[in-house]
Amino acid sequence: MDVTADPLSLLRQRTSMKWRTYPDDVLPLFVAEMDFPLAEPIADALIAAVRRSDTGYIAPHNGLAEAFASFARGRWGWRVDPAHVASTTDVSVAIVETLRRAIAPGDPVVINPPVYPPFFDLVPEAGGRVVEVPLLSGEAGWTLDLDGLERAFAAGARAFLLCNPHNPLGHPHGVEDLTAVAELAARYDVTVISDEVHAPLTHADAVFTPFLSVSPEAAEHGVCVTAASKAWNLAGLKCAVMVTASERMRRLVAGMPPEVNWRTSQFGLIASIAAYHDGESWLDGLLTALQANRTLLAELLDAQLPGVGYRQPHASYLAWLDLSALGWGDDPAAAALERAKVALNPGPMFGASGRGFARLNFGCSPEVLAEAVSRLAAVQVLHESG
Ligand SMILES: Cc1ncc(COP(=O)(O)O)c(C=O)c1O
Image 1 (cartoon, helix red, strand yellow):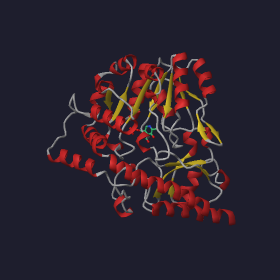
Image 2 (cartoon, protein in one colour):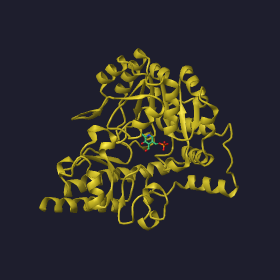
Image 3 (cartoon, rainbow, N blue to C red):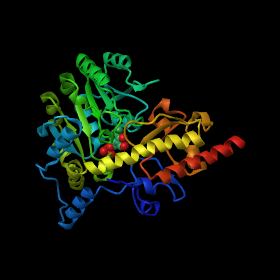
Image 4 (cartoon, rainbow, N blue to C red):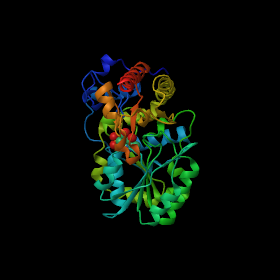
């Protein structure tokens, strides 16, 4: 299926954060929303729900767990028991509520910068204290720092907030790393919350491994939090799932107040079921478009901004750009916004190692991507000549 981004004239009529934060002369390539139209089965399901005025509370047995389990099995060969799937408002709520049950106030919780900025806030929101174990960057790509993780676990960390695939690097963690994490979690009795919201966006040249599937230790110590929201662009509809694979973790999730579940949105639920059941050919078409954009971005940067460091991601639509060679300072996104009228996410928000970096969202048309890079390159020409 051909999945093509909407034209700017239509996009500018949207009222979401991406389109209403900056004036129209700014190209918004920041927040993780995409510029593609909704998958038709999702749009149809939502429109049908509106037509039948189906806008009440979610039903207790609503089909979401079965839809997720069927998608997980078909896409990744991961067998999920629907009785081990609970829903809530969004992935952030799933993280906070799981953490609240896994830690005591003040407990250390590990994260791996550079990482999705709200992780720095969700941990204290749940009463925890952030401990940073940065990812390691080598010739072959990114890896988890297993020694660093062991030191943090041995020093008293009670939970580990894993991002798989990793935002902003688009890196699906390998099965060996995940198995080693599970062993460490078992040795030090650490709860692993695996945020897998970008998993359906894993590119064709990579493999996504669900954390809970790697070993009995992973099942015993892990909770997967995920949603259809990133892959099918449904973030505003508010629906996420928490998945477990052991009685111990099922009890942890079942111990949440019932309201955590009832706060799932009815529209989010309807859209997510449609995505998991009928959204796969759209998803494959989307991935073809994203993979073309990730290569196009490499070509555009090579030609116009060769000093920029860019490792092509293997999942999602986010590019982690090292702009430090341009001389735009610690927060190059500020210069990009002011001088190029291109909105990126500031690298330093992803952790201290993000200084000199910015995150670019290429979930857009090739034309918008090309325009963004030429705007950035034009600033650099002025910067160098000035
Ligand atoms: C890794 C990660 N987790 C969570 C979220 C947010 O999910 P939600 O809007 O469902 O809270 C995002 C959004 O981009 C994300 O990248």
